[in-house]
Amino acid sequence: MRAAVLFEQKKPLGVEEVDLADPREGEVMVRMVASGVCHSCLHAADGSWTNVKVPMVLGDEGAGVVEKVGPGVKSVAVGDHVILSWAPSCGRCRYCVTGRPVLCERRPPAGCMFDGTTRMTLRGQPVYHYGTVATFGSMTVVPESCAIPIRKDMPLDRAALIGCSVTTGVCSVLNVAQVPAGASMAVFGTGGIGLNAIQGGVIAGAHPIIAVDVNDAKLEYARALGATHLVNGAREDAIEAIRRLTGAGVAYSFVAVGDTRAAEQAFEATEPGGTCVVIGLPPTGSRISIDPGRLVGPQRVLRGSSYGSARTFVDFPRLVDLYLAGKLKLDELITRRYDISEVNEAFRALAAGEVARGLIVF
Image (cartoon, rainbow, N blue to C red; front, top):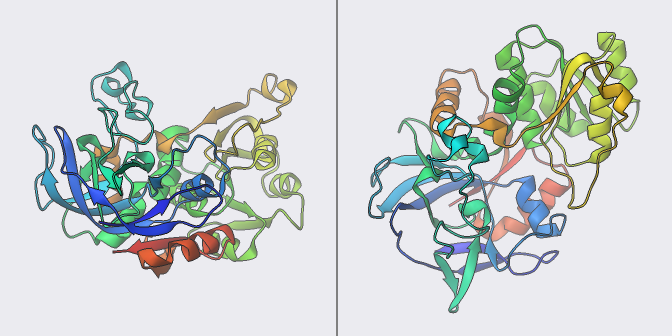
């Protein structure tokens, strides 16, 4: 298969012909149609996150068609259309059986399948999987729990975005915060996840929906996806701007960027009794500073959100249905399409804030 390989952090990726083994028991081989280009992969490539094994095929957001299945696979068959999930789950631990598979206790070792090995090799050496799924390749092998079947009338290039950014953003609002209709909310950071948190607010019926960023172009993307008010944090105090619009602050704030200052601002912009949800993960070793007096007395809630607490076998098909019903915007998210040979340009544009979402199409 043809894949983009990270050989060394802070260095460009190389496009290589990588050998891919057949799926083993409980595994699925998928012919990729498209992969989104995520900030998490950028952080792995640029050195912001340090726990990255190399060489590695990046990519944690994609969709394709099942090519082969290993022994024992029951949930998908050859020819099925699937969205890939980067969060494998065992289905049997206490978190999985209580509807919280994102917290599965039996995840495979980083970069590997459940048996601790990889399915990719290059010149005889193992190549690791990013987020188990490795969507920056024309083919991939994943655990069965990572291949979520969807209806075949869903365009797979659009479906690819549901694999990470759409689910993480929308479900942080619907599943984690459970924002009620009419509640006020603010989203700090309007990249791929932040834009989809805004869409989650629209679906929930939140009002107002305030977008905060330092990039005017990204704020305009937020307006197009349903933000009612825009705040450029580089030109005005975001906390004061939010209080002018809402009075005491927003009922719900979402931090969709890996920046500790944004997290601290979002917490301060939350009204007494309100909830601040941190989605974006700052560089390794970062710390958020919170005044306990602003937490305890006003009874604010500070909580994390991983993958929007997604139950992928339920939430992926639900998001597909919302798109096909005209309730969820995916076409508007795709700013540029790239060939795999253009992966480094896709990362450059993402880092520069030039795109709502870049899409690698195979």
